[in-house]
Length: 264
Ligand code: KIV
Image (cartoon, rainbow, N blue to C red; front, side):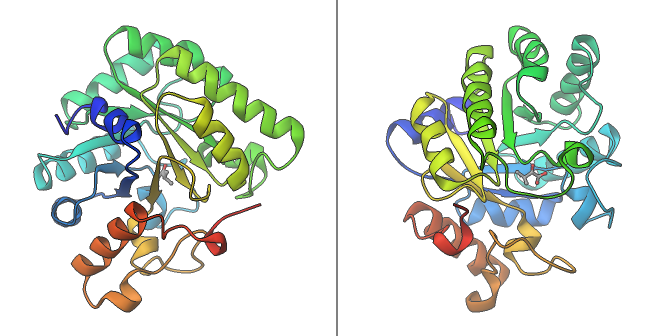
């Protein structure tokens, strides 16, 4: 069934790349599904691209539920991952109550949360209670103040080792997929081959099991500077629908990302 995390696992097993994009509303969500996107991420990046915030930190659980429910109405047949926003998973009980709202009221299938060893007890608790969880390692936008800015992570030996260790620990804790953001392509490849669950990269090279981009970045409509690992698919496509279809095709055929959109 396409709305279960088993679907992502089956794509990894048969070596088919997973095409993922963010969506925050019903109309875009509809066109993502029409174009063959495998999984829709309702990301807390909505704080920046929709709300004009400087980071994802001001995004609330109610914001996520509002947008997740809109996406579900636009794409009821899509597999939908919903971000748990900043400070919505600081204890087991709080995380469970909030994840249940994202699934119950936001109609999500999987929740995503950021971090490694510090979130393991939370991940284990959610999974034990039947909540499918996607992990997120590398650049963690919710920890941007601690990280000192939007920088590539895991370039040094210690950082790379920590990401590899965290990935294995998250898999043992029960995650069903892992987003890898802004890490060297060689590190993303090493993590990907070490895991049974699929990795979905953003600025993480072509060897991840799938790719995700912020929709507004790949349509070239994000105001201001866009990340170097993104690509404007609308520029050559002529329509939003064709741009999304071109992205899906490029991901499936390993034509995106290229070295230009990857880090070493
Ligand atoms: O919030 C988001 O859109 C994300 C992606 C950048 C992976 O988490």
